[in-house]
Image (tube, rainbow, N blue to C red; front, side):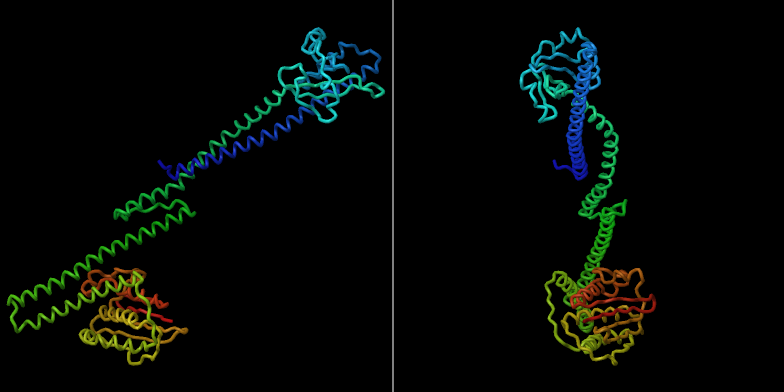
Length: 473
């Protein structure tokens, strides 16, 4: 079973912290051990030097300092340095040691011991101390030695200071335990903080996963709460924007399907009814021409709908390729308007500016541009009130061709303007339905103009006018 992101992140952080703690303890152990060993070396060396100096003073006093005083001094130095301190002659015989009293010294582990030649040799000149048992102790110990010298500088013995390695290890262990004990509370706080942070980081992702599964089932109602202004917060905002867009697109898709179904069903029903009436004789012969005209209009209506859907599918699939040619845009616009003369006369519309257009040529795909301009003119006629005006402007602006189509009428609400070029979108569904609209015309216009490297913009004032401006290179 794969770990979830929360567990992965938390345990990864936990392992990293654990490894860092282990590394810190290792470094601390090495550094502290080196420091403690060096400190113990200095203590042992100092103990040996103190004993050597005291024995030298005792020798200078001509025997005034007796063996008892020497043993007591050895014992004091041993206690202070936490070490066994003893002296051996040149033959290796231990003659004095730091045991508690003279009686015990005579029967301690040092009594009767004879050190080997390598033990009493001058090894201490090459290294400060060594690890050895001296054939006295069961376990290895730190050993430091200093030579006993007479007034003429001749060596006549050796002073040893010996301490267990365990003393350094115990101190090191104690320091590490203190370090770990001191780190417990910060570590607990750190892990709690990491847990909370990990939860806060992964919760939006978990919610996004749940919302994505819901969206796959058609539920676009879920939104991600924005709990921060960092990258995760930006992701949540973007996800919500995407969800809103998908919800809107889904709504438009359903509306489009409903509209297309209605647009297909109504003319097909009308066509079928009139044709059946003609075939079975219900419609009298003298009225058949009239009803066949209605059938023809409905067929054309179906053709326009299918053509729009095919154009949208072709444009979205990227199957079309531009075939630019140089032609007069004003002539193309005039031909499109003239082709709609019957509709214009039926609504008693006034055409303004068409007779004064500049002759401006553009290098573009004539057929695609014809479709785009036709859709703009078609919309202007549809949504102009009876007796209204349609104005055309064609001019050159900043080395670009600008075509503006303005119609008077109900206009488009300001809040609807950002969406008019989206596919399936219709400002007024009930009003659009009566105008045989499928919500694809302006989407096709924008797609075609954008493919030519141009732009299309809309402006409107309710109950006054609507203007579409197309700019082309």
